[in-house]
Length: 212
Image 1 (tube, helix red, strand yellow):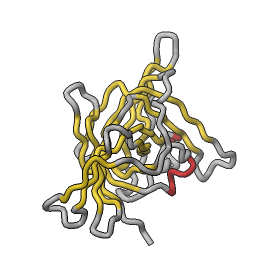
Image 2: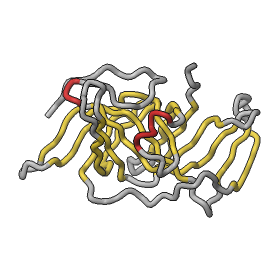
Image 3: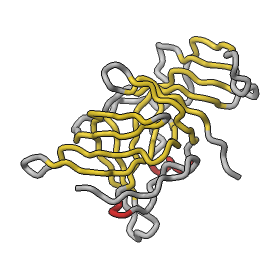
Image 4: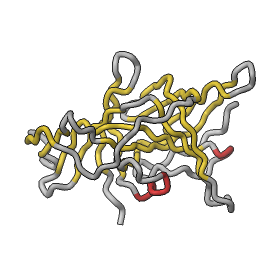
């Protein structure tokens, strides 16, 4: 089943599903750990490097402004294939999964193993590296559009193909709740490093300035 496309969201828009033909706009939430964090000279958050820690993701479908009855439908899927685009998540193929995402502790702090100055990054010259003893976990939520649905011979969903519709993502601590995504800190994906096994090895994010 293929659905009609929807306009690409602006680069600095929150990754919230917009009204689209067929209701194909969804949010995909990945479980990640912070590999490193850069700080500005005024100790504000700069660039982030995130490492996905699970292939299990949550797909969430929310109601559009035109729908009177609020809905909050979500289910777990597993990433079976990813075709990253330049500076973005590109296309995902998801398979239904009965697995739950990794247990992530919601903590507002983590231990630091190193703090160093980074040359060539005057806007964010300080880089923090979390300690290996304490996992600095976050949820990354990105906007996608469902482009096709694959069925099994028994007419069950076998796979879903999605295309990324924005490089802007929300990053929040575990336990913050899906309803708080719109108010979460926003970042823009600038680089996606792929591992030799075809999985995401690292995501490079830059903060998005809040609009007044």
